[in-house]
Amino acid sequence: MTRNTHLVLGATGKTGRRIAARLRVRGTPVRAASRSSRVRFDWSEPDGWDTVLRDVDVAYVVPPPVPGPVHAFVARASAAGVRRLVLLSGRGADDWGDSAFGEHMRSAEEAVRGSSLEWTLLRASNFAQNFDEDIFHAPLVAGGLALPAGEVPEPFVDIEDLADAAVAVMTGGKRHAGRVYELSGPRALTFDRAVELIALASGRPLTYRRITPDAYITDLIGQGLSRPEAEDIAAMFVLMESGVIAGTTDDLPALLGRAPRTFEEYVARTAATGAWDER
Image (cartoon, rainbow, N blue to C red; front, top):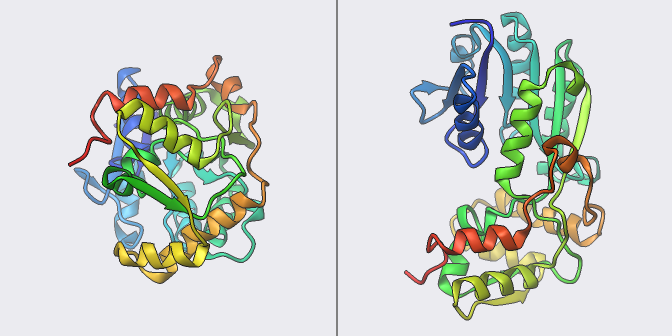
């Protein structure tokens, strides 16, 4: 394996599988790694990291939901001769207060920033695909979504655009070193408007209801999440309601060389797959 291998962690996840596919199409040597990939990577099994990092030039890193491992991983990457790290983080990482999720993001960013390697941070807004590939999907299929989000809008980013941006950074040379990119969609919209657009595109009478963060935590625990996991997700909505991350940015179009996909484009494309059809 040559030294220009590009490692993609979380390779079976929402972002990783899209990034790995794009790199392969470009002819870039890819090592796709995750807990369920042929190349296994597990944040809780550091004994296997050195094998995954061997001959890697650039690594795309999706940090784990616990603090600490990224610091050890960065040290191993440096020792293995990795040249650059591209870290996925979240918009408003500096503004999450003392929530556990915020601490995890900041810890991962600090590990990367403090290394001797070239690094780039991709701080993304909420993914549009959360409505069909993640936690918002099942409630929508059941007929409606209830969240602690009101009139403050969110500039949802399409993961297809994020994947394009990540590949541009991973393959774009030194000009991306030391950069923090704040990635948003082209327009912010409220969650009730997002659900309205999904209802229009899917042809289903979907509803949106605003609830309190405490009620949302209770709902998430009822869906099988642990209380800490539920509290982390609810904390995100508290941050969103503050308006700190409601604005759009120009970083994504600058990386893409084109306008980002709109939420309407995402909805029309996804509705055609039957993602929100009643089961």
